[in-house]
Each structure stands twice: as structure tokens, then as C-alpha cells.
Length: 316
Image (cartoon, rainbow, N blue to C red):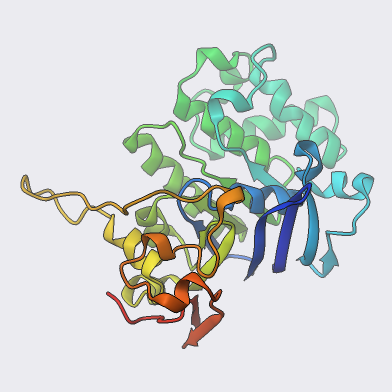
């Protein structure tokens, strides 16, 4: 349903994203994971054709949706897909809704634009979707303003907007940002149910490896604008090959013991103007050797997984 090949994105002379590839079928969930600044949201914007809004452009690679190349698509044609067959759950529910409009019209408009429904038909669909998302009293909610609802409820409304035109692919860009742990779990379970019941293809962007482990079928690990490991979720978690993936998994709390210490990754993700030569992770990698600072590694394949590391699988 969705295939991204060697995607490269540029803003002027700077290329913050390059060499990103993955594929996704209906009924599958792909997790794109990495720290802030890894290029996850840029990947989402590329799929949705939203880069021009921030001055970016795709300079190489392809994005194929249901057999159709998106990178060369004219904007009027793209606009029919975006919000229709391609749904987007934006990152922050607190700022994703118009504070001056009631909830009902904000969801109604999607079905009116993409499905050609009348106002009455669109409202009936909105109420149905809100009910599917386990929102109590959906008719009443339609007449409320965003500020009258909790963060978790706003996130469900944003999901309803993404589902209103019955999309084939849903891109969820960190859908649990700014929500408490209990509500996060509810939203993740909700997305998982939607994939199974609606046969959606879901791209789940997150920095939380535990969410990926519970929800996803496949994983792409990103660092400094590049995909550095990909494969089935079981393989990635049971036998991670890249030191960065190993470090991310090592950050997951193991239990509830009072004397347990949380593990972190030393250093920070480099900015796009300071990407290191060779492997971008080498300044933070405990397994780095001389070649890592000079030569960019290619992918080493093991089974169904692959990692871009000179010493893939050497360190655990």
C-alpha cells in the first residue's frame, strides 16, 4: 500500500533527511522510532505532501502509494488524497483544533470535502465515528469547543478527523504527545484496534520503544536524518544489530524495583548543520572505531533485518 525508497529531503542547501526506505501493507503497523531531531516528522510531512508549507522539497527517492508515485503529483491531485485516502493524526492535540469552531463542523468538513456528503450526512458520520472511538455522548460533543475537553478527548477528536474519509493509510505523528500515561495507553490500544477492524496501514511515529514493542509489526529506527536499522519488530527487539537500537531498547524501564536505575544515552542528537562524517552515531557509540568517523556504513542484512553499522551485532 505504501513504499518509500531512498527518500531525501532538502531545505535550501541543507539535507536533513536522506536514505529513508520502508514498505507497508494493509493491516500492518510500521513504527518509526528515534530521538527528537532524528527526522521522523519530516518523513511524515513528506508522505503527506506538506513539505512546501515549511520550505522543504523532496530532492531524491520516491513515495509510492497504491501504485501511484506521489513525489511528482500535482498539488490539486495530492489535495484529494491528503485527508482522504491518506489520513494524518497530527502531533499535538492541544494545538491541532481550531479554538473558534465547535467540534462537529471541524470533523464534518472532512466527509463533505472528500466523500461529497451533505451537511446532514456528514454530521451523522461524525457522530458514528465519535461513538466508534468510545467518546461518550457524541451528539453533545459536536456542540462543544476544544477548550471544553480534556487532552485525551481532543486526541480522539483529531483521530476522528483523520478517519472521517475512511483512509487506507494513516500516519500518526507522535499521537500521545502531552498526554498522561493512562491516556497514552488508551490511545495506543485504540489505534491498534482500528488497524485490525478497518484493515488500515498505520505509520506510527514515536520516540517510545515500549509502544513500538506492543503495537508494531515492523520497525524503522532513525538517527540524524537517516534510517539506520529496519526489520520485523520481533527481530529488532530480540536481536538488535545497531548500537543505537540497542541503546534505545536499553532505556526501557525493566521493572518496578526501588533500586532500579534508568539508563540513558550519553550526548545528544546532532543538528543538521553538524552531522558528523562517517556514521553519525559514532560520537555517542561505545563500540566506535576509527573507520566509524570516516566511512558511512552501508546496510548489513541478517535474516529479515538490516542495520547500517560497520560492526552490526557486535555489541550488546
